Image (cartoon, rainbow, N blue to C red; front, side, top):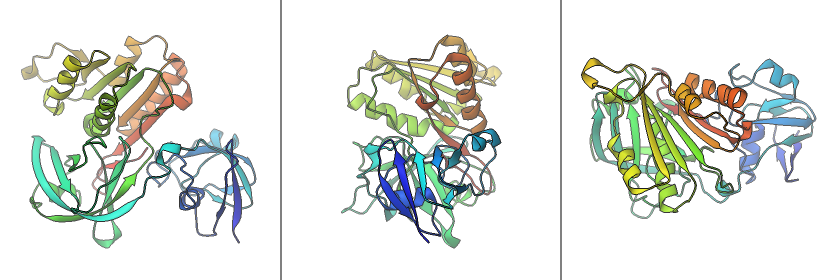
Length: 345
């Protein structure tokens, strides 16, 4: 039988059917709760159950720890109600009116930016545009009901073509195709926009952006949107990569620095090669942020990259630099032959 869920502090209510998760039902009824991966891996949808009981469902132990369960927290993308509920969750008004579409698209451009990074641009039918928030992602719908997720790298105002940065995962179902047989003018099918990784415009706090590898894609979209909006907020980008060649579009943030006095760019290499002649920062990107900021209590942080980078950054910033936990926003990229690139935050 359906269960009734009340969201606090808004007081909004919705019904959850027997086969639905809390998130699925909330989205179906137009309540924009935060989410990312939709499979219990990232923790973006985490909230608190104030009253009632839930089945937490299968999820990554890192995304929802046992002590968090004991505190009443749940991942709403996996949790199903066992009774009527009252939950505590922050609704995202900016996503409320955006329609998720399933559309054909045509590959317009394929450009290698590094040995293992392809810049892909895709075009929708002439009668269609994809309304999205900077930082969101799309799913490519493949055969056998499989999907592959990629962040949009273009800003919403520049939507004639959709831009994606695709890292090659050897053996990957989709990325092997992108780097071998996919051609310009080929037809694909997408669903989007998806995810709750986007700039919170209701704040005037300075923003720190942390990108790992192709995690630069959604952050590029966010920053270009911020520049178009002529924000006066301080913007700092830390882009971490292994070696110089992995900073596959480093010329662009350098150009932004010349054009926008409120923007700073700090590239960080974890394993610079002798031929790089690297004179910049080295090490792990989150440690560079820790070295530069003694107190993050007045900041927002937006991070996108591998789970270990994002999780470590979140924990260290909150525990060591006083960053409010709800001012850390993240999108996780999972690289594996079976999952390939999956934004999850």
